[in-house]
Image (cartoon, rainbow, N blue to C red):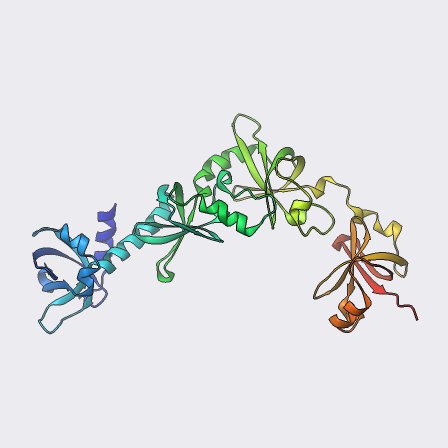
Length: 360
């Protein structure tokens, strides 16, 4: 495979050769600081200086008569040789091979060398690579009950030194970006399993992880296939009321019923709130435009103040009703109850607009 890639690179090299061309040659001699290569009709090439010392371990393994590929970095130096780089040619070959890995969907093994808050660090074929947290296999996703980022980082650090099987998700040589995916290796298996499920199905499963964007739920497979499926309940699908911290709604280990709302690219998305009574369905029977109601201030935002009208209903008192953030915070205090007038109710949009009634 590598030989085919190299031949392809050489074949595509500009003719006649120029700086940047990848050429094939034969090692004719070497000394302590230089390697000379016969390039045939293209003359004689030399690798020396920094180019020599950066790949000296590779050069030590070469013998007279060995065939090598190198990239031209200078057409002709003062001594009449073409200056070459083994390093650049090797890097180009690596990117070409990585591209083919992606196209063929090859599964390869990588050793994790480091972490950051977004995922795991490694390298593949000599190229630095990144494995995002979102691309980890479900069984390896960091299970942190309170979605604490420092705890997630500590969980990721446990992978340093371990070997994982991955696929190339994205390879962009021009940006020096190589993205890997562990969960992609199970795509075919998941595709077969998910044939037995459809949008609208209700399942019962166990909450296996909580993150700031939602919760993971694992449920047993039905039908001929065996095993378990893990899906995501987005924070917006946990409850009809506004959820700021998923850990306040579900706990790891809790058994819940959820409804499948989407299956996309072998990922299952579920909802808890779709199995609950929608409080907005009956809201117009309880409240009408112009009504005066009591509401508790929940929090402030750039748009205004969120007001809890009932345990499942929140309205917005827009900042334009106050003129400024400062004026709003002078008139309202979080946790306090005030009188408001209903300006607008839009059940389908889950929206209620309110106006503070100020005592004269």
